[in-house]
Length: 114
Length: 110
Image (cartoon, rainbow over all chains, first blue to last red; front, side, top):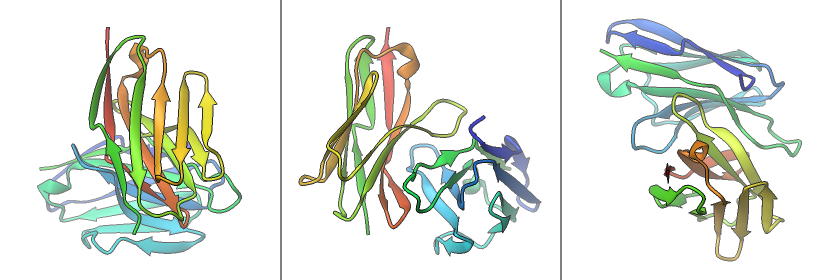
């Protein structure tokens, strides 16, 4: 375990379903991130919560909705997804300021939309 | 904005040989350059990093070099072993956010 836990590890959902991905970090970090990783594509930053401020990537469709109730938990709510949304969704955390900038990633949720 | 290019996309080396992966960045304000290793079924894991005030850093078989003038940095792995097979990502930090390279798949041939 890296200190960042993602659940579930695998998820298969239909296009009309609603589901949520969960991320929890035990490192005392103050920033959390959602990334999408598709085959043969770079890591795509979706959302950032940093120092309790949400920074949103404007190119993310509204069918993805993040929620960060506190600095340790991050959710990604999914609804009416498309098959092209199938990917590995990675959560990461980091400490903004203080000199230690490294991101710690979870193991990801492998999402398949059918 | 910042752009990071990573080469090669695939690298195949004989076990025991060295491997070098190179990245270039565009924004001279970038101040932190980590390298991540991603094994199958896992998230990326930080393996080494370097700050803009340092030219080289080493940790056992891996090293990173930074040329600020040319705006490029490289990962060097010596005496490669089968467990080095993975995808490696470079990144550059600006305003506390990482901009990622596209990744290099490293294959170690027995």
